[in-house]
Amino acid sequence: MAENAMKSTRDGVEVYNQFIGGQWVECGGELLDVTNPATGEVVGRVGMATAEDADRALKAADRAFQEWRRKTAVERADLLFNLVALIRDHSERLARLITSEQGKPLSEARGDVGMCCDLIRFAAEHTRRLEGDIIPADSEDEQIWIQKVPHGVVVGITAWNFPAALIGRKLGPALAAGNTIVLKPSEETPLTALELVELARQAGIPEGVVNLVNGRGRDVGNHLVTSPITQLVSMTGSVRGGREINKAAAEHLKIVRLELGGKAPFIVMDDADLEPAVEAAIVSRFTNNGQVCTCNERMYVHEGIHDRFLERFKSRVEELKVGDPLRHEDVDIGPKINSGELDKVHQMVEHAVSQGAQLETGGQRLTGGEYDSGNYYSPTILTGVNNDMDIMKEEIFGPVVPIMKVDSFEQALDYANDSEYGLSAYVFTQNVRRLMTTTRELDFGEIYVNRGGGESVQGFHKGYRNSGLGGEDGKYGLEAYVKSKTLYVHY
Image (cartoon, rainbow, N blue to C red):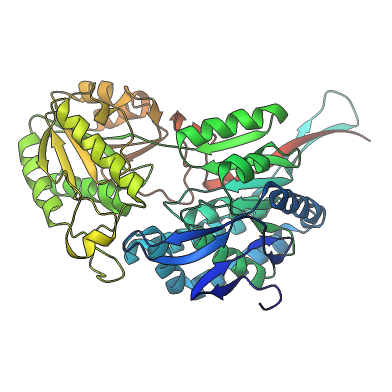
């Protein structure tokens, strides 16, 4: 193996190492197969770190912090801009890797890489905008200075549904603010993260500023969260995982930022423009096979437009093409991430039907031909539901959507707010009064009005209730990566 090599080849399969202190190192744990969910083929292996490896990564980040924090805002920004340029140069290769390990269509994988670039670029552009204040004091010959300073070592834990963008969402603002970082990607999709970290090395980011360890939450993740070296934990994942991290971090009263699940309501009123609403409902439900926390998870359609909407929506759903995105670039929906997720979605559909829901289309695993090798599910619509059914309460995270008829905007808002989640919501109406009511009454952190989903890097991605703590992106998200220090200066 070449010195400081990211990966080697064993038995025809690439085996990736860990990145600690600026070096690619082998770890003492087991090797984990990373498989293509479209075919079951092994596309790579990663060495699984131990708690000792995680500790080495944290200590490397802690040592690097002392120098990194002293770099000027412009110096940090220039290195992040170098990284963005390298990611763009390798964008097509990274997109194909994302599709190989995660299963989303290539067009969406390219968007994943593009979002990663945009998130890092935004952070780089704002290194000089992390501003403090000078406040008048109560004493003569004195001023109060409020400085914004970095926390120290940040731990970034990412989910599998956006292998590139979520790395950019953690790495960019952490480094821009003067912190160092230890990343732990999902075991399902670690390869893209590893390739991005190698590009960070090539970009000239100093040793120890960025580190990456692969491992399971119960050992590696737990050590990263509970170590006294860690000052801030930023995690994207499940509600269960978020609760465990919040509990584990409580011993040292760490700052925790959690972006968790969602159960987005999609409200369509009788004055909505029908075609744009249908298309937005399609994109907002079936992008990435519904494996997006902001996805359209439940629909409330006004009775005055319900039947026409359903007819058009069903027609569009049945036109969607499901298949292997690397074999057919015109595929709309790829495979589910793994067989367990596939089983979960199918069980939710069957349970909904047993509770009285009606299956309008779909509702089955896809089999035959290439489908037999992967985790494919048919795009599914359920009607005849009520708001107390489990399918209207629990996050589906798959290509299934229940549709419910409502008789008023007020009823739709009541049903929408009746949820343990509070991340995103969608509203289609041309009525200004309804829109203004939405700002006050719809209790979600991110609301899309007369458009489909997809947040912007300059916005603020924040959930309420079980959808998380804190928030990410934009200037408000960047501020989470600094802390305030107050100086009373007598002269």
